[in-house]
Amino acid sequence: MKLRTLVACSFLLVAPAMLAAADPDPADLLGRWELTEEVAKIPKGTIFDFQKDGKLIVTAEGKKEPFEFGYELKKNVLKIIQPDKTSHPTEIVTLNKMELVCKDSSGAVGKFKRLTDEKKEK
Image (cartoon, rainbow, N blue to C red; front, side, top):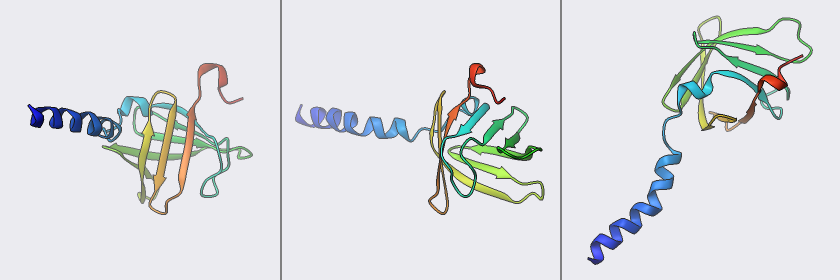
């Protein structure tokens, strides 16, 4: 009986960590995300539009033309693919319906909030 109680208590302690480490749902990534603070010389307010066909359209304030990239999401690794086919992997720390947090290999953390229909880019 003591062993059963110990196993049950251990599971309750470990379960939240297992849920947090679950692979993100690719459908949650689709759509428009706004960078909430500058990171890696990318200005706050830059819009990242993840499209279903694997395209990523990035629109930075003050730029006339958006930048087009590709992307792949495998487990919790998001690869941004440049036009010359080089890629930059980043770890997805948090992904849900309203928040995206990524961390690259240098430790830089990008925080995004989902743009809703009411807050579309002007």
